[in-house]
Length: 136
Image 1 (cartoon, rainbow, N blue to C red):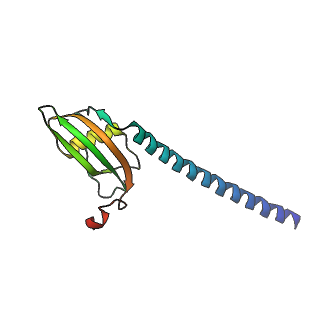
Image 2 (image 1 turned 90 degrees about the vertical axis):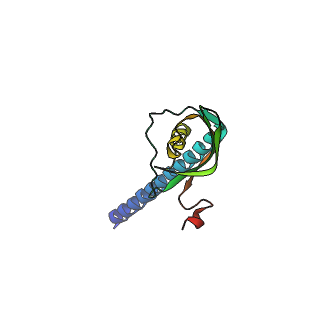
């Protein structure tokens, strides 16, 4: 009986260790996400010059996350357009501000876009933003 008790205790220890490791990984992932969000907030506003040959933006209604942002796009022939609380679908749960600038120009089909200044951005889960109720 001592052997089976030791085996049972050993299994319980391994289960506890596995559960603790899983919890630590989840905590680290959440800490990394918060750190990325803070880094983006600290580095904005920033101005980008999107590559005209960048991959075009394609809306994906099945995406789990969206980026909500404020931006200004200046045109090469004068004038500008502002975007406030604009939402675009993203793949995954993060996006680089440089890629966001390219997506803005592509999504709005801005042919004479010049510099794009992003003043705010944050990733939100689909359905967790203010206009989610009106979209249903």
